[in-house]
Image (cartoon, rainbow, N blue to C red; front, side, top):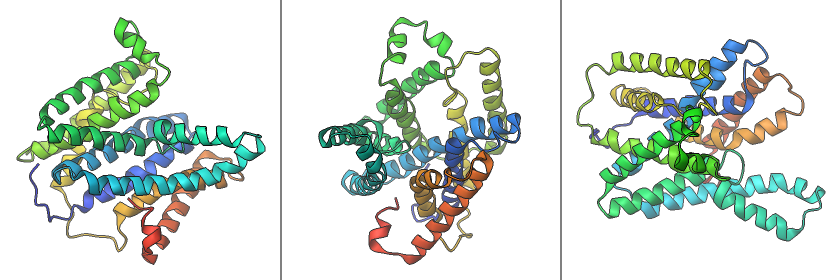
Length: 327
């Protein structure tokens, strides 16, 4: 979508902040201790838009800015390496107490760093780095349309292997993929990450915002919810991380953010940086708080509040070294 490059799209940063709080919900399961329906609706359904939105946003701006690989990759690696060091230090005492040898510690760190992500939420950075590399290659070859078509095919394979697993597991070639030991990483990186990253390409190609986008978004939300209900009733799923209607829903949510850019409204804090910090730091906050907060909802609220408070303070400090932790 060929919008003005100088336009400040505050709505996207606000949405990223919301998604950061939703990611915390994925890892803390709020409302599970209060009401099962509320828990499932919030912590299993609504949260599914969070990580895809991060991918779409990253893909949109990377592709719109002509895939400037060196500059973008430097930022990615700086942030990933910095946070990886922090989480390695946090995990080091458990390695020491388990009497693991230095060689095995090094091997484990290298494997997790390059394949799984240096901590359980850091898989996103590995996926994003992979998306940037693949997209940059196809961009140089002038084959972006081909990559987008390929990404759609990969997404379909991913949906069949998750929400429609009972069907997908009956397909000979795909069943081997779904039973592959590293399938979770394949799904995260290629069957989810890349398709949503490349959705940014499609959005940039749209010349004009559809006039009925508000209505179609409401319809898609309804279909998204109905799909999850049907999948659960028929017990088809291995998981519902991605579904068919999640893809068009993310397309329309992002277009709505572009339509209602909110360029004349702004917080005093950079909400884009704040959402990034919250995403990276929240597992550390959870690790500390879970020692004395045993109610899921309370843990969620406290993690959101403390992560945000620390993020605001650090952003206000505007320290160059600290800023390296903010993507």
